Length: 480
Image 1 (tube, rainbow, N blue to C red):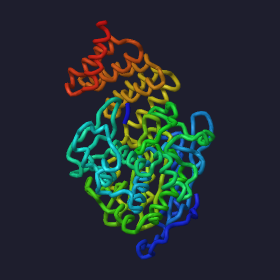
Image 2 (tube, rainbow, N blue to C red; image 1 turned 180 degrees about the vertical axis):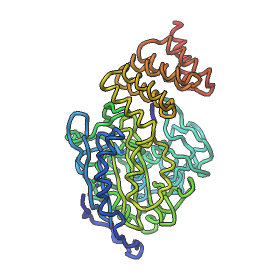
Image 3 (cartoon, rainbow, N blue to C red; image 1 turned 60 degrees about the horizontal axis):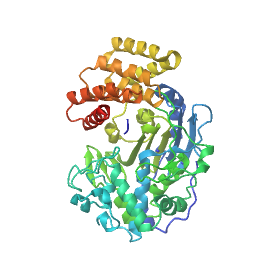
Image 4 (cartoon, one colour; image 1 turned 60 degrees about the vertical axis):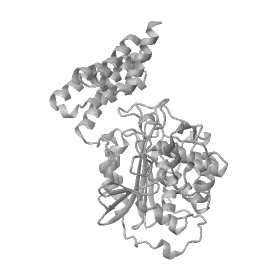
């Protein structure tokens, strides 16, 4: 279930003191423009089941290479770094942060002033903690709000805003609303005015535009299944950016140079606001990785539900960086290999709890996916049992759970039930597998079986509010 640039560009930058932008001279920070990585990428993508990927590499303060690999969809169409539009997912957040900082420099937004001073927030529903939330807290992920609301969930504070780190996409929704109130325009229009037009970014938007239809990537799930392309009609600050590798690279070069920002604001963006983990802090819109060699800005994106993942890394002192977009939920499985072309220990990668492309479970996933394509669910389950006997650690609960939801997304309901049933047999004390089985039964039109599965999930985990709510709802429906 739930859980988005090539040549140096010429834009008119604000006149900024050179001393404020002093940087360490870059001497081939990225060796040979990442040639070795680029040669390895097709094989890495094949191993990770990534159909298509766009990559841009920055060295010495300019884009030295950009290109596409693989296909933008399952039928045809090569990926183009300059044309193919991807979902940027959470790589939207640094762009929102940049726009907010421009409003700070314009005197229209105060980082330390509560957002309720700019617009009203009915979603707080009288929670006085909402009165404390500031733009700085949003940008540094210290609001205490959850990452994402599911369905009719309310906004919830886990702690007093400003006291510690907790990643939150919902907080960026609030900041997006404040930006709209300040500018008097929609978020999509505001981003065009504040970011895209000044930086010469021409093929990007926070909403879907019909001009993207001619070259848009199509997302893929963890087993290679095609996902339905989302076309957002309304901007969502934390995640709805539609862009190309070339366009995002233009943005990265602007960030590296501090284009459009006052020197003190540019420095503040890179200053740790809260510690996250050893070697990792968070500034304003960016994770900051620090080690003995220096520091780098980083961010990842995960729109797995629609089949897109992304990652960017920027070393401002060495003037080098990269961005890549993948049309696969497996795209972050190769992030360590891709980021290795930028010097540093990259402590932030340890926080990304994603399946590495060559992990035993990932190899098992790929093997099962091949069997599913060639021989259907029977062949896939036979392969699962073979792998389970050969190496139990390669077949964790999540493996068949992911397969079941992959099949549900393809409306292969009975195959999904088969996968979840096998998972229940392997993990009979897991509440999650029964919760998932309930979803499959419900999708296949079996409300009684779905209710019973949800009930079993709550028996195994009394904190599973979702399963309890669904079980009660189905029970009430079945009584009438």
